[in-house]
Amino acid sequence: MPRTVAAALAAGLLLAGCAADSPIVERALVMPSGFETLSCPELVAKYKSSDVRMKELAGLMEKSGSPIANALAYDTEYATARASKRFAEQAAEKKHCELADKPASLEPPPAPAQTNAKK
Image (cartoon, rainbow, N blue to C red; front, side, top):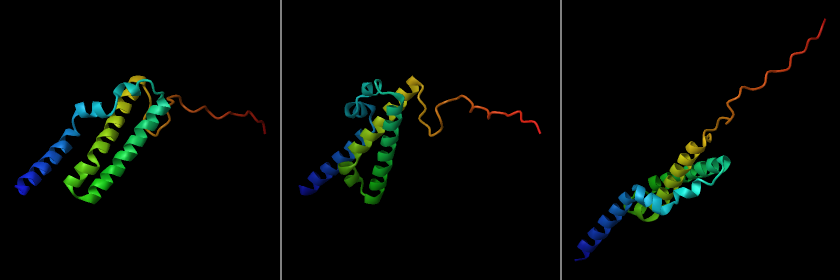
């Protein structure tokens, strides 16, 4: 009997890990409408912080090497960070915010002043 309980628990944990990939779960973890009121700099900050957190969690999950431990310890937080990143990106696209590390301005830099010095 104890083996069946352990097997059922392991199966439940693995299914819970798969559920973290669901858009329904993402919307339950993070409210998409909360990103609509943020300014471009706030959206960029939210996007970058979520990206950094996802990378940290991916490293921790890789280091642990155990799918069961990952499901217990990291899946919910990883799904939350992924949802925050995705919703920040969607809101930034709607507001035409620049998420990349390049300057937001599309104007060319000002030309250097020319002097008409006579020799």
